[in-house]
Length: 154
Image (tube, rainbow, N blue to C red; front, side, top):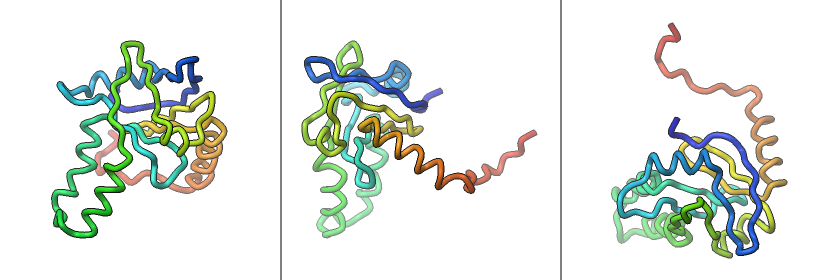
């Protein structure tokens, strides 16, 4: 499967590195493109967490900007939100990464992090905030269903 699944907690080591879960590293390797950073990290604009985008996914996210007048205020605003705090990152051979201070601060990270799979991306949370977020999502989703795919289940 080529999506990010599950929730994992890891601690920062003495050098300030944290290991990406092995299953997430497998997804990243499957999506890796020659000559590009493996990941693009950015602060979530809706939650106190870090979003981790595979480089190809981040490129897709940015594609609609090409349809907006590049000299418009709308383009400037969206570009600033998307790119100004984005951080390209290649984890080391053991899958460890050092998170920039501004991202650690945004997510309130101290000694441990929770990695949450979100399908096409993963998020990095302070552990107790991740627990609250998952519980809130469960409560709000209790009476929701996914849209039908149009395929028969036969």
